[in-house]
Image (tube, rainbow, N blue to C red; front, side, top):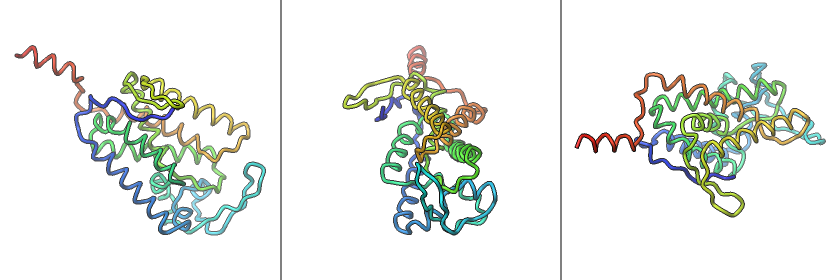
Length: 248
């Protein structure tokens, strides 16, 4: 299932923060392409560096999928924990960034609408950091760089599932475009992450930080309740129309 769009008729504000986040991710990606691997390996989040407060600068050898691979390293920021923030704006390929930005554009606007621009920025960053910490806790000895916006975006998906479970989402399934409720699309997504994480625990090698997705999703589910405190209650568009009709 690949989401193509959703019903955002309930949205009342312009998603300036979502657009800005997409722009920042694109700028980081261009920097990665321009500067090269020294930037990517230096500023991505590496669990070993985070848990031991060290900056690896020499290549490390790791066992992966039955092979011994050399993982390049490069000097990072000071303190090295800054990479928990920078890593969520970095990506590993064109498909990686395109897929993540599509998810952010589709599902992020309505969460920004609920929280407001300022709170949504904080929500997004906290989900991203929470996702990275979940991955670090699970793989504390790993020297493999972790990067991508998917952890933060997973938080957006968790919040969306809570607030808009029945909102219709257009999904590409094989070669057909199908409309499904959000709880089916996002429920399938998080179940897939959980199953994939179990396979990793059983020894499968995938190269994907599923625990970051799970941690980010859980953070989003919790934070959407906490950060919506104090926000004015939303009135569905249909109810607004009915109220106006009655007044007339």
